[in-house]
Length: 136
Image 1 (cartoon, one colour):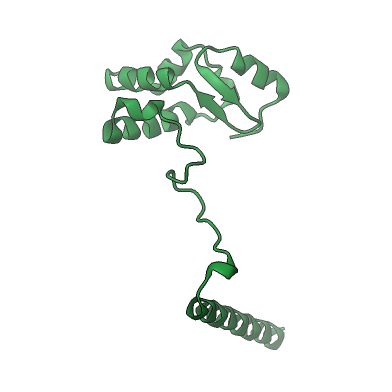
Image 2 (cartoon, rainbow, N blue to C red; image 1 turned 180 degrees about the horizontal axis):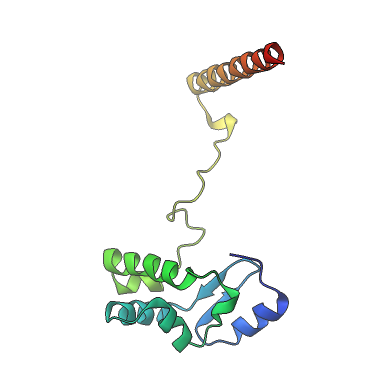
């Protein structure tokens, strides 16, 4: 997805099916997601669903409606319709990057393991540097 201009963001926010728009992301209302999945399961194609909702597709990648419906449909079928109404951002339940462990919370053995891994990485880098110098 590309960056949305201020104009695009304002226009998108005027649509009743859009809850929020950042520079790079659009958040749709849960009702729209659920209805869209139901329409999709009934045979409408993703672009038709977005056009029917007056969402300007020229501001999105070509496959954006399809990728949204694919994600929403998976959640709908696996977790039920109500799952589309649950906000899980920032709860730690949606995957994302693993949290960094604080070194102060590691045991002595875990710290030793971290050091061993770091030593191995340093040795590998030294070997690669030596090979690069040798081949130059």
